Length: 73
Image (cartoon, rainbow, N blue to C red):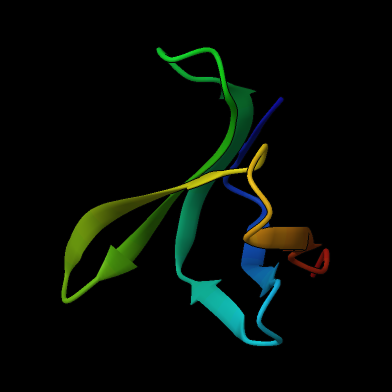
């Protein structure tokens, strides 16, 4: 599933108790990657450039994630 344009931030909760928060998100997608694993791909603005981070959801490192949408103004 692809989420574009209306995402305020994405929070990824890791198995070790840490969280990773992404702001300036341009898109988020959950899909099967080229190796057949379920992946969470986050495209976000970092240092005035679009960066991409991918988490593999089928390993035990990611407990869950939250997508927070922008409020309608």
